[in-house]
Length: 174
Length: 276
Image (cartoon, rainbow over all chains, first blue to last red; front, top):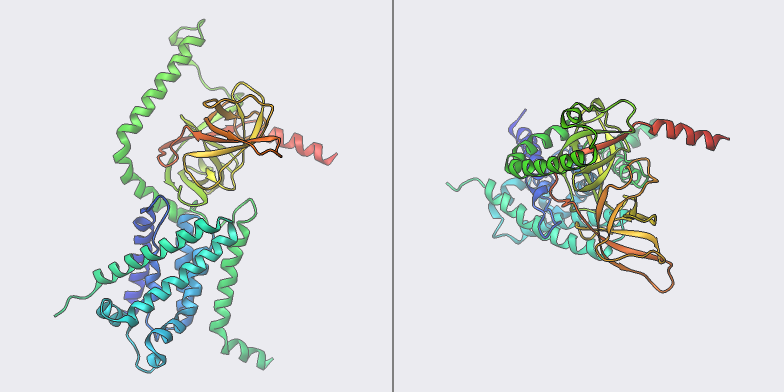
């Protein structure tokens, strides 16, 4: 096993635990919880196995669902984000990202504050994930305005938390 | 045949995506029915274990207030016992044992996870089928009703909280026989709505709402809350009453589970009626 596989497994477990133990207890304004666990999908290697990404993001979402009793909506939203990821990458980094063998982790952690590409990649990913969550929750209940406002605040807090986490795991400059 | 295989091999990734998507949608749709899917729930060993350990930590912060509440409840119960059973002295009372013919038996369990920030809130408690906790038992604490057991595994159970838009509990105004249904509108964690109380009923702000007697789950007269306000529309013959809960649903420690020992007898009786 090489270090990329190991670091991805580590990220999977760490993000799941952090999500369940810390971020699910934030309850901002009474009911808002950010979902930075999707950083796993965002930071997955761009040249990595697609089937494996689908499977792991499904499992990650399912695990989050189990902890908060939300019946499959996180599994579906993570899966759809994993599916949309190549398109988001293409949109943010240009069509040539595949040929340059873009190292997402390195690029994202290095340029988080000074590259519009990285910022748009992260925020569009969060947007896709949250809109799916929003649509699925709407499908289960009918509190349109409340769910919409919650989605927007969740989006903003998730973005803040994700940027913060990336900044924290950023390797120090030499 | 060859072409079919080729198609599957060529599109295996996309097919995997569709398969997983289908599975997750199946989970979501299954929760529309009353009984939730058996797989996605925090009543399983792994999530139960994690929440139990986290809760052990949290519990230290609340030990004192939890103790105070228990002492107060004890004192209250002692007052009732000493004032009502005058023909027995305190030694005899201490010897009183629950008998096997009692209609209700009470189990105790600890809340290891409490949610109150979504539309469908569930609690996870430590205690499952090994302790005799099963589906559809009532859950209360000293302040009043909390919810109904939704599912139980060997050591853990999930409770459908009173703060769940799917929850429907039979309730009435204390001292009268006007029954209604207790529902949550998904907005405020301190309030629930009592619907279907007829306009004829005399109600006042501050009246106590208790559980009704027609449920197999809860015994009669368990407190729920007090009337905060009542409103009705011109065309409706019923009140919608906003009830302020006695319980602070955001802060729960130990709970009692009420088991009706005759529920099987009642069920077989009712099934027999349907067959005829």
